[in-house]
Figure 1 (cartoon, rainbow, N blue to C red):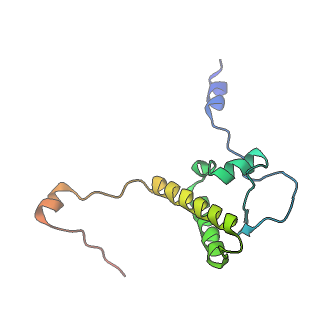
Figure 2 (figure 1 turned 135 degrees about the vertical axis):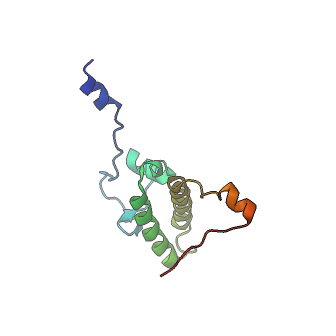
Figure 3 (figure 1 turned 120 degrees about the vertical axis):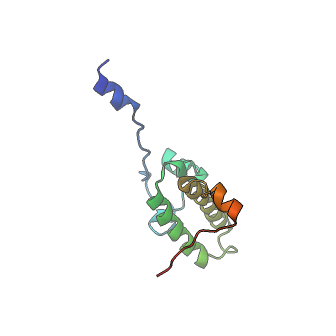
Length: 124
C-alpha cells in the first residue's frame, strides 16, 4: 500500500459538532450551545451523554464552561430540573477533561523539600 494512503487512513475522523436534525420543540440554550436530546441523532446523543468531551480542545472547553456557568447562574432548578441536572453533569465532565488536558500539578524538587524552600513568585 502506498505510504501516503496509509498515513491518511491512520488519521482520526473528527466528530461532527453540529446537529443536522430539524428543529423540534424549543430547547434551552446556553451561549451558542443547545441542550441536546438523548433520542435525537448521533451528535446529540453523544453530547447528551458527554461522549464528545474527549474530542474538545482547551479553548472549546473554556468557551463551553463559560457559557454553561452563565446559564446555571440564572436557571432556576425548580422550573427546569432536568435541564439543571444535565448542565451540572456536563460541567462536571468538562472540568474533568480540563484537568486531564492540564496534566498533573508540578511536584516540588527533592532538594527544595529537604531544605524547606518554596519557590518565589513575583507579581507585577
